[in-house]
Amino acid sequence: MSKDKMQLIDELILGQELCVLATSDGQEPHASLMTYLLDHASMKFFFLTRKASRKSRNLRKCAHVSLLIDNRATHLPHSPDTALALTIHGVHVPLRKDQTIDAIVKRFIMKYPYIQEFALHPDTELIRIQARSATLLQGFEDKYETKFENS
Image (tube, rainbow, N blue to C red; front, side, top):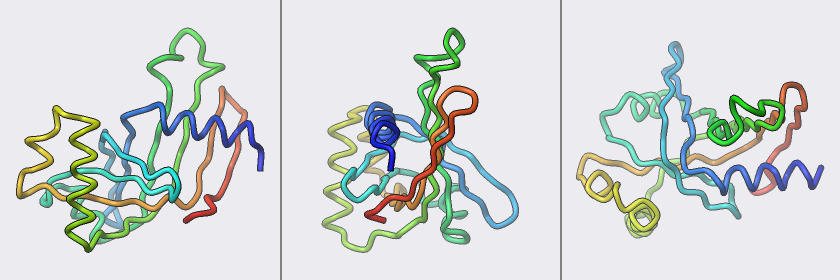
């Protein structure tokens, strides 16, 4: 495993606040711009959404997702050769324990205070995605693929 590439992946994941979450109902794809929390040790991503949202309905039908995290805000359009795009393949793993859910929602609010009203709304649910593998694209053609050990 290339330490340089893994370090780039870590820096990208830890340095961003937004990603694109791609879900599917088995026929049609759906992409959503989302804020996320990360349990870095276990490579679990957490998201908040409304229970009736399309992404939530899709996850009940098809647990497999992709996440896209990139640094386009700081590297495009002036230096596309240094741009990073990380595609993470993962699976939705529902949370069962209310204590765990409450603790993670509190972490969300601490990191993103502006999301408090949305986070505490009774129609909001917490989504957990277990990352399985990733593909890092650096510049135009430098591609690196990895599987996550803790998944």
